[in-house]
Image (cartoon, rainbow, N blue to C red; front, side, top):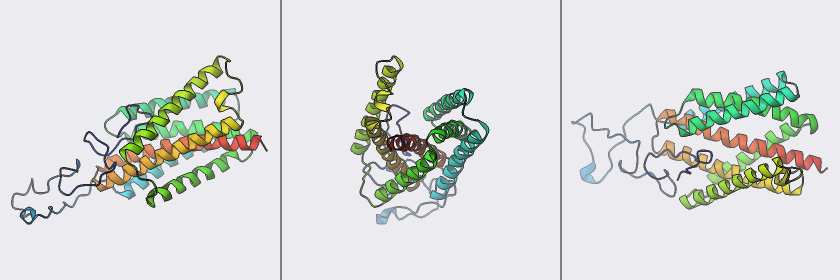
Length: 285
């Protein structure tokens, strides 16, 4: 299941018309595995067990995605975000100029993310470039929040880690089943949420809604923030499912960059919303 909106789509590792693994498991043989290669195509003398009803043995390959590949690429991508954030925090004091640089970095990161979303193959340069510019934006944003609500970024990091760990635990325990229906409903809610936020932004910009409207630093803003974080957790479950399916289906190793890209975008989403939520609660103390 893929959304037609690249902002919300989480690219499945199946190249067929559906989403790999949504309610299905890898099938024996090759019909259900778009990445499988017939190990006997190059060796006409290889013996098979097809006559006995057993699937042929899978070939020994070294170019398939593994969990280690995902971990390494994710660490590299998130590390780039962290380095960019630390440098921006240390080198860019809170000022109008730094705000402008933050907005510019966010726009560049958005463009790079869109380009990668529309590409059929992962580009490490685009993904790391996105991570670097996103890091600059997060560094300035975090410093701005910290100057008003001391310790907010640290609390937001802990909150992001807690949400991620809890989501992974719930997913691995099987309490959430990522099915096609689950994905459709979640993506529909996410799109509706973004449409409402876009309308709210326009109302605030034209002075119709005061104090940020739905994104105010009050109870309503807190409720919206919690919804946004829950949507981030939803996208994490899609990321986990895609990684699991990619490994099970023998996706090419380069696809681990897409896994890292998806995880990074989701974690950035959760961190930003967590930062706002911490600020709201700190304001009400």
